[in-house]
Structures are given as C-alpha cells and as structure tokens.
Amino acid sequence: MIIGAGGTLANTNGLNTNSLIDGQFLMVGDNGLKQNLSVPISGIAGVNYRFASIWKAQNTGNVGTVRIAWPAGLKALRLIQSPDAVFDSNDTVTDMSVNTQTVNGVTYNYADVTIGNGQFFTFAAFANAPGGVVNGLSQWYRADIDAVNTGNGSDVTSWTDYFAGTVSTQKGANALPKYRIGAADYFNFNPGLNFTAGTQTIGNNVVRTLTSLDFDVFTLTKEGMAAGGGNPRYFSVAQDNSGNSNNAIMDAFGLSPTGTVERRPIGGGTQFPGVNPAFSTTIPSIMYHKLTNTTAAKGLNGGALGTAETYAAQGEQFGGHYFGDTQFGSNGSDNRGFIGNIGETIVYGAGTLSDAERRKVDTYLAIKYGITLGRIATDNYVSSADAAIWEWGIEYCV
Image 1 (cartoon, helix red, strand yellow):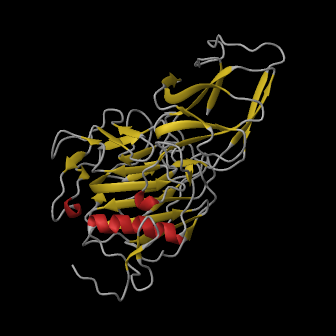
Image 2 (tube, helix red, strand yellow):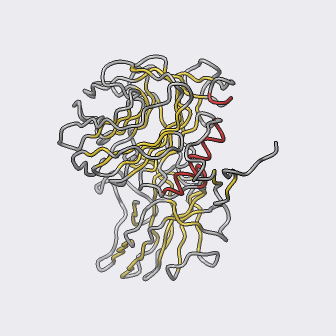
Image 3 (cartoon, rainbow, N blue to C red):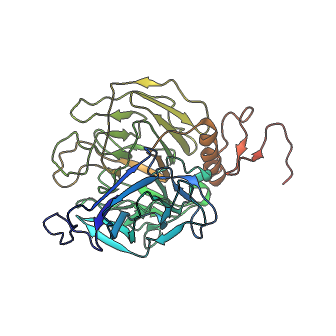
C-alpha cells in the first residue's frame, strides 16, 4: 500500500510536490492480519471478500485529501472506510478499480479520499477461487481463461491469473510455450500450455509470489513430462525481482518434471529434497505441494501426503514466478525448462490450506479434468459450499 498527501503520487520524494504544514500528521497501522482477500463480505455491490488486515488512522492537524494506492490486479477493488472495525453496507465505499497510476514501474489502483482521525479502513474485491477456497490464494493460472493465443499451436503471448490479475509474459528473447486445444486424450477436452522445448519461458518478474514462509502449490500436468535440459523446471519462484546476475536468484522454489523440489534461501546453498509421490505415468497429475519453512510434502490426485522431507530454514522470498526455462537475458540462472503440458497452476502463497480446503480444490480439478481422486472411501468430493457431491457407498444414477 502507498499513501501520499494530496491527489498525486511520485516516483521519488524529490519529485513529489505535495506537502503538509507544520504539525500535520497522518499515521496508519494495521492489525497484523493477512493483507489479501480472505474474509467474506456481503451487502456491498460488486465484491465478495475483504482483506483480513484492517488499518486505523490517526489524523493530526486535519490532513485533507490523500491518495491510497494498492497494486492493480484485484477485480472490482474497493476502499471501505468505517467508524469501527465492522465493515458493512453502512460504510463509505470508494471504487478504486476505475483509477490507475504507475509508480516506479508498478501499476496501482487508487482512491483520493480523506481519512478521519480514528477511522478504520480496508480493501475489498471480487474473488474467483478454485473450489471457493480463497484463503491464502495468490495466483490461479488456467489455460482455458486469459491465455492469449491465435489458435492451436500458436504462441501463448501472455497468461493472466484468474484471481489477482497477475500477467505472465515473454522473458528476454526466450521462445514462448504453445497453446493446445483440448481433446479426449488431452486434459478432458480442456486446453493447455504445451512446452515443446526446454528454452521456452513465460513468467512475471514484478509481483511477489510468496508472502508466507508456509505455502501450497497445486499443479495440473499431463503425463509424459520430461527434462528440457540441465536442472529442469516447470515452475519456479525467484528470490527477488532485482534482475541481478547470479545462478541463485531463480532458485527460491523450483518444481522439476522429474519430481524433485528445489529450495534455496537468500545467501544460502541449494537443496533438492526428493519428495514422493512421483507423477502419474498414465493419466494427468493433480500434484499438491505443501511447503513450510523447513519441510516439503506432496500428494497426488487427492491421495494422502507422502513423507515430509526436511531442509534448512528458508526465510522470506521476494521474487516473481516462471513457467519453464529460467535462463533469459544475462541473469546467470542454470535452470532449463521442460517438455510437457500444464493445464492449471494454483499458488497459495500467503499460507497453507487445511485438509478440508485441499479437498475442495482437488474436487474442482478432478471433476474438470476427469480424474478419480484418492481416499474416496474416507473423503467425499466436496463443493465450494461444503456439500458432499459424491459419497462413497451411494449409488448414483446418470
């Protein structure tokens, strides 16, 4: 969040012509909760979730209009101002989505408002979430939505995540993955991104992907993935977005088509925990990756998690994310891409899911892609409304 006095923001303090008079102060602080969409909200048109984080202001000396800005991407972003910490239809709502400004290369939505002394405020937006699980969600990439292409076999020139609007594009001069239409033997008639060479890349080096030490990643891939070169990756998260040239910067978190996981703390050595289970060799894989600061575990197609593997503490990571090859420009990376197909990637970068939440996401993916989930004798297929939509032992008529 950026707050600036007056009705403008600038790239530097020196360029900022706004000023306060002596004795004027506007101070804000939050409750320490997650700064993302996680709390359901009703009664306010166009939005369905608000941030868990709530800010309170101290306005001394009658500071007037300020510009409050949040990175663009959330759908129908609103600023909600309230005299108390309860947000409802009685509060003041300002549409931020209609206003954009770029500051130091980052595009923000903003609202020009006055924040009264003792006033509370937060942000709300409309969230699309797999299985209705929005808690901790960062990105949700779907090949059937916002993968820009000109037809079967053409380049995917950009890929926009369906949750936050993060846009992945070509990196350096690397080739782009290809768009492939769905078929009976390809993602249950759903399209995918087809990486035909280990030098293809699409990604985003502006956002911060992981805001928690503990996070989850779901990937939906087709059987038959293969290495596209040395240290192959099909999905990676960088340590930062500085663009500095060294072979560690792309190694914060990496998923290999061979099944290994890479973790590397800033300033530390890389680690490759061999985490089971392996990808299916006969059908597409819904692979659930559950990561903490010191452990990694995986679960395949709704099955139980394998044994968690341990590694040295990772600490905070600040970079964007990439599909395929992470070698581009002169960044010094040594990770090639893969040969294979991706249907969806879902990143819960702000925290890990409960077992019940995982089952909702697995259910969504399983029904869409025609995959039978594991543990069906003990765990139902569950809708976003927590209703059992397929129960073991019940005969269904079609």
